[in-house]
Image 1 (cartoon, helix red, strand yellow):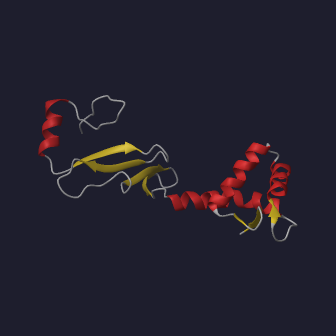
Image 2: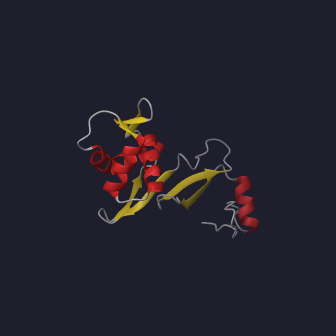
Image 3: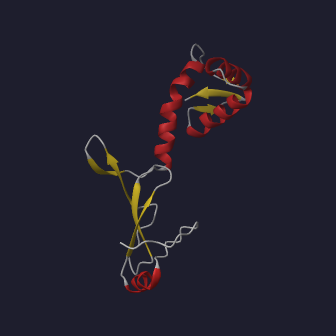
Length: 148
C-alpha cells in the first residue's frame, strides 16, 4: 500500500519516487476511497493502460454489523433516489389529497399541505415542486394538480 500526497484536490498522486515509478510502470492503479454520499468504501482505478474502473461503476462495500463483515453495497442511482423519495413522501401526499377526488387548484393544494404538515408557505411550494419532480402529482388543466 502506498500513501498519497496530502492534497485538497484529491489528485491521487502517490508519494515519492517509488510512487511515481509504480504509477508509470503498473498496468493498473487501484484506489480505495470513501463515497461521500453513502459512506461506503469504493474501489476504482485511474491511469490504467486498458480497462479502467470509473468512480461511477466502482465496487462499493461497507461494514455490516448484522453479518459481522464487509458486504457489497449497491451504488445509489438517480432512479433509486427518486424511488426512496417517493416512498418517503407518499404518506404525506395521501394525507393532503384525502377526501378529495379529481383536480385540485394550486392554492388549495398549498393550503392543505401547510395544514397537514404544519409548514410555511415557502416550504409548501418547495414540497409541491419536489412532488412534481418525483411523480407523486402531475399538472392538470388551468393550474390544477392531480395525484398519480
